[in-house]
Length: 96
Image (cartoon, rainbow, N blue to C red; front, side, top):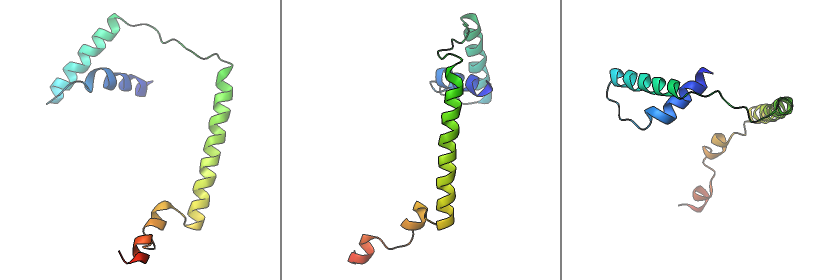
């Protein structure tokens, strides 16, 4: 929840300001928090509780696929940076 809180402050208050000191930052944050507290509303959940387990399962599947791909690349040394840094591009062959 802390990350969400600071994300909201950054998007709605700090990015629009040109702050030159820590005191200005603190003043801006306090003013934003006071304003937010005056018009505060609870967060509205847009998904049902039945939706959450499916979302978690899909996230785990995606993470597993990502980990497998990264592991395969590290075993073969086939990362993009390795291939680009090898000097075997078309310019080298063409003498450009």
